[in-house]
Structures are given as structure tokens and as C-alpha cells.
Image 1 (tube, rainbow, N blue to C red):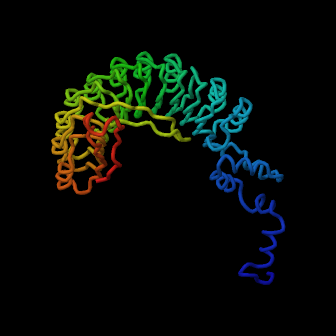
Image 2: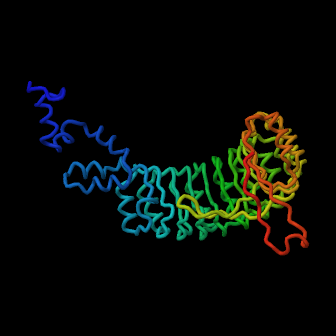
Image 3: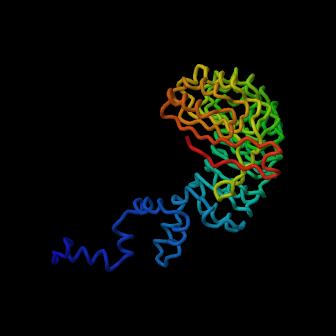
Length: 395
């Protein structure tokens, strides 16, 4: 044994310093090295592949390391050649693929992945506006084609028929979709758990009722901005979707208290009626526009929700922004909902601070988000000066 140096024998120290390649090649099994490389992101793997030593290139480009790919922070202006190379490199190993924001990706790129990477389970094409009508992958469980506004009913039909196990479908901003597309979803997606149809403005009760009847496992539904929706969809949800947990109906101005009588039987834990204002576009989310009120919701509708058999123990969030008919009586109806964690009351003009304080005596840990806009002054007061709201107050 050589002389000790900081607790490491000289022979062992030299073994780990004289030949870097020998350490990787001979001292660690390939399986362990691949496991280490599996924690690297796409950018780091590509850098490792450029190292001159052959072993680094082989390890970095091994298909088992390419099970998850997100090109958003790497290269969004990808070309067809790059897509083909990635799909061949990943092959059957690829499980999760995100091409969100890749504006150059079209149907041909999607077909390439479908042919070479048949085991994809999660696919995000959010904002890939060149996508029109393409088939999916047979094992796909979650598909996001939000803001792909060229997708039509024919594309939806091809996708859902080729993806029988689909559980999550995000179609936000797909403005060409009509009820015919929803009929295909209802007929071919019995496992569907999450569905987002925000701002799909052409859909009506007819298409959504078919989805309710065909997708009994549905737990989360967003139809914000679908102005043609009426109480009929609330009845259909109450009768066909017992597992529903999250319902977002912002800007569905035709909904009334009548529909919530039936819906109250469902154990929804998150209700959203709120008005979603425009917000700045970020890399993770394209603009949301929901600029009107659910103006017909009254205290009676909240009474049905608060007195439902599941509300007392399961209702966790209710957002009532810009519901002008809501008063303190609604808060009284919710005081027995012991699981209620948060309520939003932005610009509910008839809600008072006194009503909120009474609610908090029953639910001391509840988070109340509210602000109170000033009443518009009469023409004789303040002239024609524009009205401004006071800053938000978290009570």
C-alpha cells in the first residue's frame, strides 16, 4: 500500500486521477452511469455528447436518457431535420414530450414522433399554431393542444380514435371546435379525467351533454368563456359526472341558480365563477381572456351549493369574482362548509366587511380575497373623470 494522503492511499489516488476515461469505463458499470445521466436535462446531455471521449458520447445519446424532453428552454425554432433526429434518438424510450411554443412544428413533425416514438404518454403542443389535423400516439394519456387554432373536428376525431386511453385533454383557445368535435370526445374517451375547453366559443350544451354522458370519470372541467352554455350542462354534470371536483365557468353568463340545484349533489371541491382579466403572456401560459361576469348567480344558487350533501366536508375553494347579485346571505350559506379553505369576492359590491367577519367566526382559518370598488359618482360629482378602483385588500 502506498503512503496515505488525506485518508486515501497513493495507489487509489493515482487510479482516480491518471485516467479519467478508465474511471468511467472500468470502475462503474454502464447501468449505473446511465442512471446518473438520466438526471441530466436536454441541454446538458447535448453538451456531454460533444465531449471527445467516445464513452461520454455513447452515454449521453443513449435512448434511455431521453424519456422526457422539453424544448421550451432549449430550442423553439426547431426544423424538420431536428425533429427527425430527436425522434430517432429517443425511439420507444420517449414518454414525455413538450414542444410548447415551437411555432415551426407542424403536422409532419407530429407524424414523425408518432411513427418513431410510439410510447409517448404526455404530449404538449401548446401554442404550436401550425398543427391542424394529425393522429396521436396509442399510449397517449395527456394531450395539450391549447391555442392550436387550426385544429378542427376532423383533427379531434383522428386524435381521440388513436388515443383510447386519453385522460387529460387541453383544448383552450381552439376556436374552430364545434359540438361535432365534442361528440367524438364523448364517444371515444371513456377514461377522460380532465378537460379544458376555455374560450372554445362555438360549443353549446349539445356537445357538452354528450361528453357528460360518455365521460363518467370526469373530475375537472373548464368551460370558461363558453358563452352559449346554459343550465342544461349543470344538470348533465350533476346526473352523469359524480366524480367532478373542479368546475370553472367564468364568463358563462347564462348560468342561473336553477342549474345549481342539480349540481349541488356532486362533490365539487373547487367552484370558479370568477372574471379572469387579461394578463401578460408568459412562456408557460398564453393570454387568457375572460372579461365579463356570471351576473345571474344569486344567493339562492350559493344556498344550493352550500347545503349540498357533499359541500359540508368537501368544498374547498369557491371563487365568486364579479357576481353582482351575491350578498352577505351567501356567506351565511357557506359557514357550515368546514373544509372551505379559500373564497374570492373581488368586486362583489353587495358583500360587506361585516359579512366576512361573521363568516370568519365560523371558519377562522379561511382565506378571504376581496376588494371593494367605489361606487361610481353621479355626473354632478367629479365631472367626467375616469373611475378608478382602490387597491386590493386581503382581509
